[in-house]
Amino acid sequence: MFDSSDEDYRWAVLRTKVPPWLFELINVIFIGTSLSTYYPASPNLIPSSAFIQNVLLLVIACPTVIAVTHPSPLTRTDGVLALTALALLAWEFTADNQQFAYHAWKHGKYDAREHWPGARLAWTKDDAARGFCTRGLWSWSRHPNFFAEQSFWVRLRSPPLHASSLLMAELKQGVLNLIPLLSLPDASPLIPADKTSFVDALRALVPLSPSIALCLLFLSSTRFTESISESKYPRGYAAYRARVSMFVPVLTPVWGALLSLTGQKGEVDDLVWGSGAREAENKGKAKAE
Image (cartoon, rainbow, N blue to C red; front, side, top):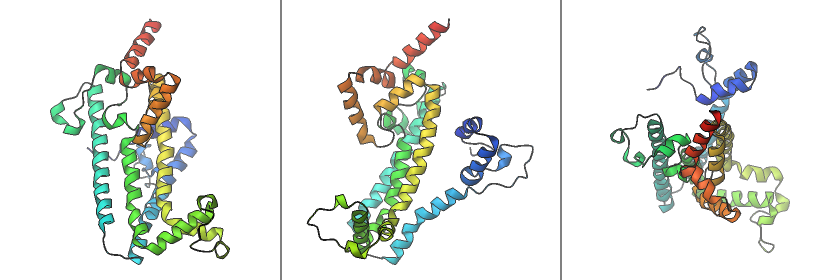
């Protein structure tokens, strides 16, 4: 159940790594949790605004304005985008449920009947010993839920781009003016370069800003999350990072192929999906004794 006094586990770690004044600054401009969460003795503290998140949400909503000002009839592309959105929501729902089911298994509270069918995986003792989920969608992406959410917001800003051929032309010219090497030598420019400026090129790329802003936000927070995980499971999570892509699932086979070339794939796979994590844990206990 939702509890307003709860906090993201990462903030407790962050408080131990930065001075109190810096954490409060981060809280006010980014986290947005009431300071009374951290200081229960002062329940009347004013909640912080997290204005950066609000600005990001505003920027993400900007493509809606573009869609309104560049109207066009619905097409098959719109239908494809709608189905893509539903598929991404299903992906994220499945990933979150698989993570929830894993932690239930890890803590000995797993009952398959209580979990969604897509999360009823063949969990093993090795999975529990590993400490983090590497089954199901988590075997293709280290953060499949984040991947789906980022992709959903990217998809959300797609309609304004394909709704207007003029906007697409401006976008294409903006890219070519910023990165001339992408243009073929004999290609005639849509807008002559001598009649546009660097600022014009940047302005043409504005529709991409919501996606860029959100992806950068996810990338920074995900790296911090992974630093916490790797501090808990140094060997296992390092292997997981080497074997499985952070976000994009199609890159995971590429990482596997690269490990094969270096002769490390077998050992890494055992740590990520086999008994390697449990064997390493037993060796650690034996040394401690």
